[in-house]
Amino acid sequence: MASNEFQPLQGMSDIQAPEIYLWRMMEERARALFTCYGYEELRTPVLEKLSVFQRSLGDTTDVVKKEMYSFKPSKHEIAMRPEGTAGTIRHLAGRGEEGLNARVFYIAPMFRYERPQAGRKRQFHQVGVEATGEANPLADAECIALQKSLLDSWGLTGSKIQISTRGEPSDRKPVADGLRDALRPFEQELCEDCQRRIDENVLRVIDCKNPDCQQIVDRIPSAIEFMSETSRAYLDQVVAALDSMGIEVVVNPKLIRGLDYYVHTVWEISHSALGAQDALAGGGRYEIALGKKAIPGVGFAVGFERAIMALEACGITAGQFAPQGGVWLVSLGEAALAENMKLAAELRAKGVRCGIELAAKSMKAQMRKADRSGAGKVIIRGDQELEKGIAQVKNMAEGTQQDLTIEEILRDA
Ligand code: AMP
Image (tube, rainbow, N blue to C red; front, side, top):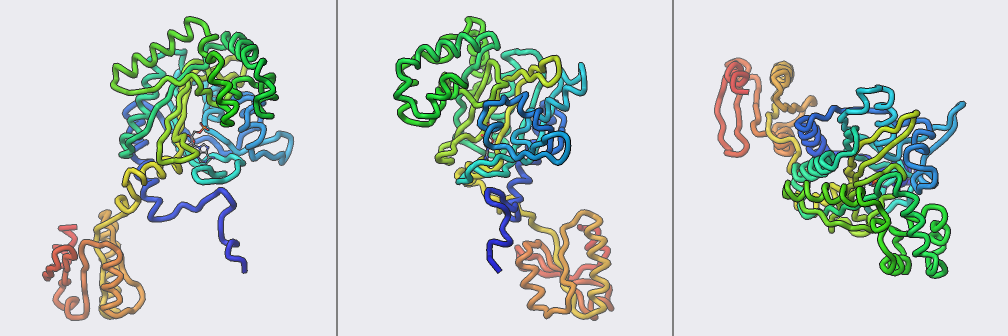
C-alpha cells in the first residue's frame, strides 16, 4: 500500500495536536478582540454561486481565472470560496439597510488551486473582518489598528505594514490611461504576461514580480500620480489617523492587491520570516455590487498558516498552549477501577482535566501514562484505600504524597 494513500490532497493539511493548540489560542484571542470592537461572527457556506466571486473579485483576476475550484452539479456553476469578502457581502446584501452598516468577522477555510509551496496551500485558513459603511478614512485606520492589535494579541512582532490607494472608481480610467501611455514605449521589454496585461489589466503590470518589469515600473510615474486630489487626500488622512494611534505604516504606491473590488485604501502586512511568500495579511476598502446597489466597506484577512510560521520565528510555539495539569487516576484492581470511573466522571463534571487507564495495567505502566499526560496530581486507589474511603494523592511537581478522603479530593478539585 503506497504510504501516501493516507496523506491529504496536495496543498492541504491535517491540523493536529500539538499544532492545533496554537490555532485554538489564535482563534480564541481573535474572537475576544473582535467582540471588543463590536464585530459579530458570521459563518457563510464554503460553496457559493461562481457568479458571486466573478462579480465581486473581477473576471480577469488570477484568483477567478486560474485558481477557483468550481463545478456544475446542476443549473448553476458553483465554486469553493477562495476568500471571505465576496460571500460575506452576498450575505449582507440580503440584509437590506442593516447590511449597509454591519461589522462581521469570520474564521474559515479558503480554497485556491495554486502551485503549493512553503506558505502557499490549496486549502488555507483566514481570519477576517468586514465593516460596511460609506468611505471614511477613520474606518480604514480603525480596521488597520484592529488587525495590528490582532497580531499583537498573538504575540507576533516584527511585521511591516505597507499601504497605498486604488483611488475612487472615477480614477480608474485616468490611472489606466496614464499607466498605459507611460508603459507603451517599454512594451517590448516587458514580460509576455505584462505585454498582455497592458491592455487587459494594466495595474497588474505594476506588481509583476519579474525584475525586468519592476525596473520599468520604477521609471514611470506611480498610479497615485494619476489620481484625483480627493483620493490622494483620503490616503493622507488614513496615514495621519494611524500616526496619531502610534501605528507605523510605509506608503508604497506599487502595492496594488490583485482584486477588482478595491477602492481607496489597500494595505498588506509582511513578515521577514516568511521568505518568498512574505504577505502575512492584507486588507482594503471596497465597493461590491452583487445586486443593483454597491455595498461599500473595509476589511482585512490574515492567513493562519503564514501567521503560524511568523509566530514560530518569534519563539511562540504550540507546546506553550497545550492542555496541562488536572489529575490522572491510577487503579489497582477491578473494584478500584470501578470506583475510579465514578470519581473521574465527578471530576470531569466539575471541569477538571482527568485521565484514567481503563485496561488492567501495572502500577508502573499507569504511572508512566500519568507522567506523560502532564497531570499535576495522581490519585491512586487499591483495595486498601477503598476500605478506608481514601486515596493516595501524589503532587507530581513537588514529589509529595498524602492520603485524602474522596470528599476532600472533590472539594479541592
Ligand atoms: P489575499 O486574499 O490573497 O490577500 O490573502 C490574504 C492572506 O491570506 C495572505 O496574506 C496570506 O496570509 C493568506 N493566503 C492567501 N493565499 C494563500 C495560500 N495559497 N496559502 C496560504 N495562505 C494564503
